[in-house]
Length: 344
Image (cartoon, rainbow, N blue to C red):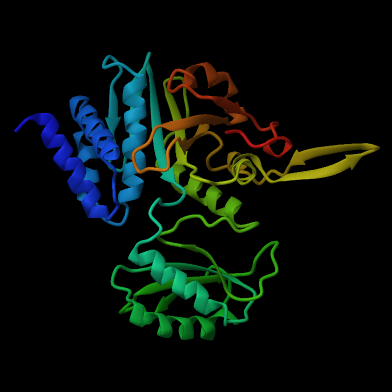
């Protein structure tokens, strides 16, 4: 069989497994990306995409990002997916001019919204409007959670929501036959009329005032755990995050610290709290920057707009970081997205 036909058939099969109705153009573009990754030795990532599963949209993001790297760098620069140096390696390693760039990728939300999981969550959210408890809840549904389980889960949540302490996880119906995990917490800024969804295990970040910042920051913390070494002259650690439609203010607050306004004499000024990810003492010396990627097309197969949020501790490595990708914008601690229309 002709190789191009083979890659096209693979592309069709991948989309069929997701129930996403891909256009001919999307099928052709994914086939070309699969061929490129195979040619450059990243077949493992192709296999991961073909395996599908609940995290298939995360894998699409990694696949797009890998394609971006490969197209920007010639074959003289080795690019590896989940390199074999470590038992639990970061997602990507790129070697340029004696420097190893280690990249861990996170995806802030998933593309597909009309699948079985989302419909279950939507019904649960509607049911919680009748639970008059002013708290957020976090929800993670197992694959065997069914529509028939919703009524019992809502009763379970109503029973535990009022008296629960923060960060206690409840197993529904119990730990031995768990179908869902639920947490409750009091909103930091928002007065809620009823029990309200903050996040669920499939959806990722939900843009609720005062909550998105915390969840984005938590994504960075999880990603940074991949780096078991500090930065040095020969190693640069970076996190890449697929931002989707996330607000630039939430992103900057999560990375650099919460923005606030104040008056100094007659002058209106602004600053940031020291609560951003780059202020976390566990990761200050481990992460040089965060690569923000946004889709150019609303499609699973897309090119990216790229920006770089720089850790002030590693501004002196900016020249090296600029060798990795063509960033359209470099963002520092003192820059304020709320002064304009954002960064992208």
